[in-house]
Length: 579
Image (cartoon, rainbow, N blue to C red; front, side):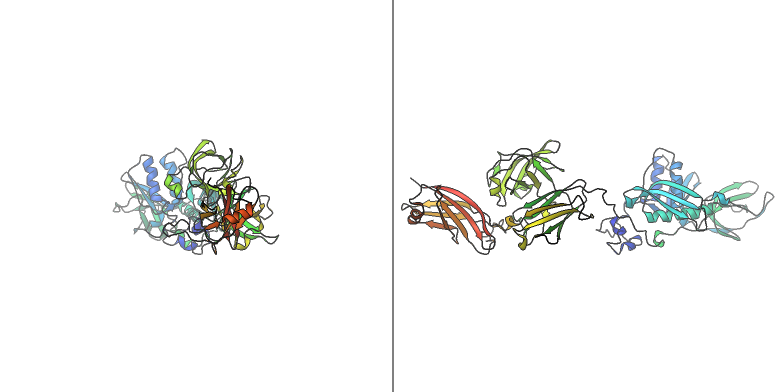
């Protein structure tokens, strides 16, 4: 079997504005959109089987519809009659068996002569009244391109000034091009049914049976035998067959499909702009992200403007974010280990949250962000999640201060603080280094709407600094000697590539290694140094010169410095001098 197309059906082949080879699909070898169709032979067999009829032959049926909906209880004849007419199928009984055949496959098997007897002429021709034949057929169907809504296709005889209309309403699923072709075929066949012939044949033609297709001497066309009367003579009743149905490939290009209708309304979205650390594997300023939530969801365009200039398209929100708000305050917690003492209780705007395994947690799963009262976002993870009320979730076993957000964690989060799940819906805003730390307007507008649509939201924000700030050092230590000197040391962290454990140290991540150390005694006096290595020695003389004496406690605030972006997040530690 070949070829299955990765492009989504039915957008391909109907969206000719996107793909120029859509017209080839009707004549080509694609399986997309065809494997799920309802071939007429299988469909007829299924209907017969449902009604307990097992003696039939559908092998000569060659037609197809996209789908069929059983309208309700009824007989097999009621169900099949219009379907056979739609698909150009005829049926007759032979030896107690139902034989189904497509008109397109019928051929005249022989030409026979006619003769007169005492009962009538050679050939008796009957043509139905013109007033009995429809000149327009309106076919009602379920339109695949319009999400299975009712559709209608018409076929009208060109010479009809005031056409007599016949409505054929069927619970079949079709596309508009196929429906129009089938309606035209039904109209052609309606004229052929109106012409019948009665004639006598030689007694030697005993092999002639109902359902045979024959040609009549000096009579045009092919004739389908409907009835045979045997007596002193053998008389046949037949109807002339219409012209053969063509294939869909011969009907020209399909009509232009309807574009998906725009939403009647667009809601004003809830928008969160998040200044987050650089994610693992991220580049540039990928930490500046957006989360958009709305019901209904039309999709939103994200654009930014600096200093009142023109708005620049940055990104498109293609899916709603999972957002909510805390219904109970979240207190500070431990860093670097599971927080079992705190619980996040929140109400979601939509969606759900799920528990994960410990391995998935340690691999970065269930990453989320909680806003605090200072305007900073703490990045954290949760292992357990339980829905304790409709839309209300309780999150436990937390990993706090991820990505170097311990400064936001120590503040905690109040009741009503925003919550955002950091999944694929929370995408980068696409800032550049020139945007970092600069105030800008962010406009979130519904797709396909005017920029002054009431649902458009504009927010002023300053973003990008968290992604470029150096992380705070860890494991600060102090060693005091007998002379009063103190040796400070610490371990730096990195924003880039810090999860690889194979090297002797993590990458630097900044242009050069530099630190800012502030050492105080609690009285307000501060000693400032900027070493280029993760160590600093303060002699007794330096301490005495700044503090007037050797202090009993030293408050050390250590931060890594970026030559481009300045001082990063600081970590403060208190050291007590031995007695």
